[in-house]
View (spheres, one colour):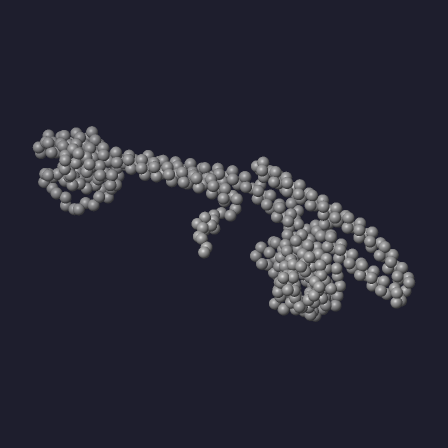
Length: 445
């Protein structure tokens, strides 16, 4: 039974890049802290302040009720109410003999209602019906007394704490400033890592990155310097191997040339003909060894239209007598930076291998997402899936079924895969729709 993991479900929605994750690490604590501060200050503290201010206004209303209840109607009571209104900065009026003419649903914070109910009960031991609602920037309060209605208008600022809104504004502004600074610094810290990843990816594809230099944090500089050292060692190894093979090629081909010349001077005969065939086979074998060992050394990258490039390779192969058996299908114009001769050897080997074992061969190139695929299909016997990796090994020939390197030394597909990997790609063997084998060279764009 599969157990549900909530962290794995959340992980799908998290950023995948280092910059996004680093920014999330900075932003999340700030958001959580602001949420906590907002709750304790803006909600709890704000409620407390609002209740205290409402309690003060309720005490003022209780004072005015005392004036009305303890002074008979007349000029004296009116003067007292007017003097209280001036001192309290309220607008106060008393309507004797009136009752509430409407239900008067409260449209104000409940803190005022709670505060007035508590003050009324504390001072008078009873509750007075009242209504409170906002009109413009004032709070109109009506209190039902036994002989009339006491009306007063209280400025809204006397009942609401406005400092909380200012606090929220400053908190938002400071958070935005913090976020901007975090983005700026994180961008500068992540950029060296991105450049290192780009340089490593380009080097893996066989491309040059001449302007790459270590910079950034100490750990990133060490990683970049280690990459530069590794790249130098690999390039030095490839150069030494290429120079060694150039010498081997010269040293071996010179005696072979002398042998061919001596055999030619001896003329044709029952003894010389097999020797001439052996010399030709040795030259062919030597060329395959050198092609395999040469790899990617000694050739620069250049932009190539793969559709035109493939037409050239197929045209060359058709001149060798395969016309009618070889054709191009489904080519798309794709420009890619490649080592032209290395890729030519790769595709030529795949075409030669397909022509050896199939009656009809088709070649195509198309874009597949982040990759360009060069496919060579034939209608031959194919290769069993469990033996395809075996067929790609250097100097390896299948003993039965389809022999991939007939007439060679087992390096045709190995050279092709080595060339594909030198471009950061891969060579894959698959089932062909034609019934035989499909060799697909996948190169990253």
